[in-house]
Image (cartoon, rainbow, N blue to C red; front, side, top):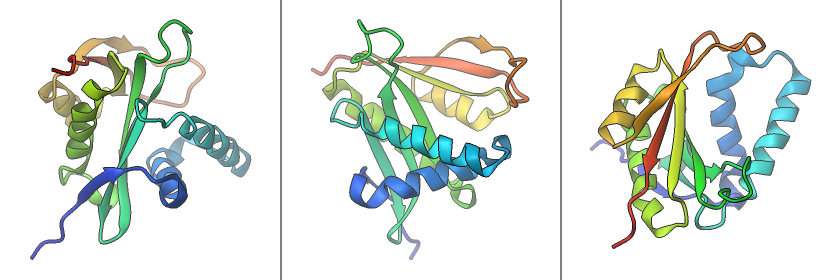
Length: 170
C-alpha cells in the first residue's frame, strides 16, 4: 500500500523550521553566503507572524515528515488592502515534486480562501516552470503579465504574475 500525503494547517511549534528548509532547498542556488542565509531566515520567520486564520499556511506531511507547504501571506504595500490581498507560495521538497503535492496544497488553500478576508490571491512563477503555470491555469488563476528579468537580481527567468479572484462564501 502506497503511503498517503496528508494536508493540515501549519503548526508554528513543530513546522516552522521545516518550512524554511523546504524554501531554502528550492532557492539555494540564488543565495551566495551564510550571512545571506541568516538574513533570509529572519525575513522568513518575520512573515510567519501573519498567520492568523485569514492568512494561512497548509503543510503536506508524508510519514510524519513535512514535505511541502502552501502559504497565503499579506501583501503589505498598501495599508488599504493589506488584509484583503495575499501572495501565494507553494514549495515542495525536490524529491517529492511532480507527484501532485503542490497541486493538492494549492487546491486546499483555494478551498480555505472564501472563508477568509482575502479577496485577491496573487502568485508568480518563473516562465520555465511550465508545471506550475499549468496548475495555476487549471485552478482558475488568471495571468496578469510577465515581470522582466531585473538587472539587479540573479534570477535568469522572467516571472509570470497571476491573480485568483476569491469567490464569496455562499
